[in-house]
Amino acid sequence: MSNAIYASLTRQQGLMQEMQVVANNLANSSTTGYKTDRAIFAEFLVGTGPSQDSLSMGGLAGHAFKMEQGSLKFTGGQFDIAVQGEGFFVLQTAQGPRLTRAGHFQLSPESTLVDPFGNAVLGTGGNPITIPQEASNVSIGNDGSISADGQLIDRVGVVLPQGQLQRDSNTLFAAPEGFAQFEEANVVQGALEQSNVLPVLEVARMIEVQRAYEAGQAMLEREDQRITQLISAVRER
Image 1 (spheres, rainbow, N blue to C red):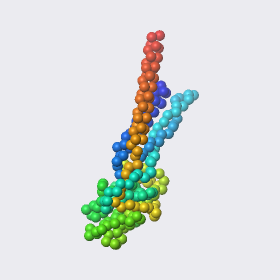
Image 2: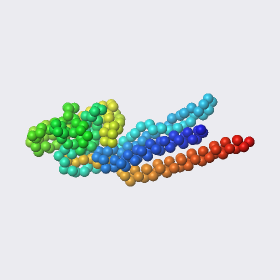
Image 3: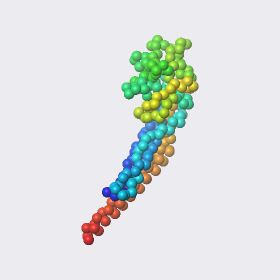
Image 4: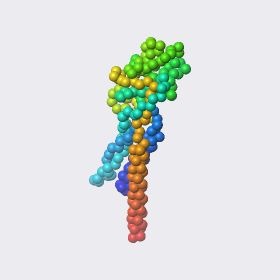
């Protein structure tokens, strides 16, 4: 197989991975707290043999997330909360603590504040938040403090990650280097942060990737024809 085909196949694979990222962004354009994903590619060199030039190729090196805040949708839900500005809520999952901007919470049968998947929301002390069953008129202040009937119950933890985030699911992030409490967080009760995906831009990117993939496919077909013609010419000698 020629070096041109190797390089083209690598490019086609990268375009497929980019298409998957764009498609996932579009699929989550209405997902609460979703952050736009971008694939990052890097160049690497591959040896082609002794005393021969190396071959430059590319591959997926990681992901970058567009962390700009999405618009707020006011729902009036008692346990719907959004972070205005910087910060993440902390959830206790089976895989460990995870960060999220999706604040659609509810009470479990055990009166623990959880997300729709049953992951407990952690307070500033690092423990799950429990709302007494007899509590009424629950309010959540701008600083995340939870009160019922005028009595302070707990405070929703809002943190800042230390280092790069890794996407664990569509709305959950892992923070391998840890995180710290953000004392200046601004929490809004009765609101949810919408996805920051711009569908028009994602569709435009999808068309661009598709055209690039089609051009690469045409190049592979031409190279295959060239090699076939070369083999035929050699055989006819």
